[in-house]
Amino acid sequence: MNYLAHAYLSFHDPAITTGQMIADFVKGKQIYTFPEDVRRGIHLHRALDEYTDHHPATLEAKAIFRPTCGLYGGVFMDIVYDHYLANDEKHFTSSASLIQFAEDTYRLLQGRHDELPPLFQQVFYYMRTHNWLYGYRFKDGVLKSFTGMVRRSKYFPHPVDVPFGVFENHYAALQHCYDSFFPDAVAFMRNEGLKGL
Image 1: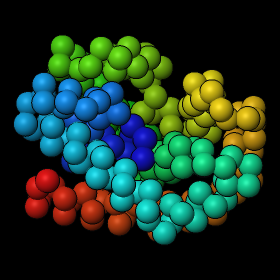
Image 2: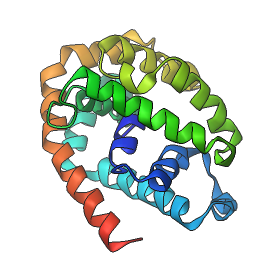
Image 3: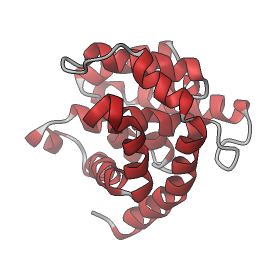
């Protein structure tokens, strides 16, 4: 799951959204510098990542990427899941509803800017400036995200057109993986949110 899914699966809770969005930028004991409700969002983010990685549909999707992308397939699939979510009319009934959700998320994070880890503050600047959450709706947005991932990865051996080609060539099969996975992810997060961590 990437930024859009983590934001969406926070179910409009400001502290949970904040925690989910910053989780990858909080290391070790740094978590204890955040309020309890934000820490809860960080824990939920990590629980969702674990659930996602081991879901049968994700394993199927990773197998599609594996021949050319190896272990990086999971990272690419996180971005791909956001693309299908951005186009899922069960969750975003129109382009306008996704735009509104993205703006609401940016406004929430901006309002808590001083609480955000410094590195995430930098990421957030680009996220909002280039409207990443809305951009996932388009293949070009997926390409830009893939490009950034490949640029940051020291050991990925291929140019970006290799994973992007997998995405385009297996678009329907990857869509099927998303369709099998996402309802389970919603149920998982509602259950985790109710029972607490």
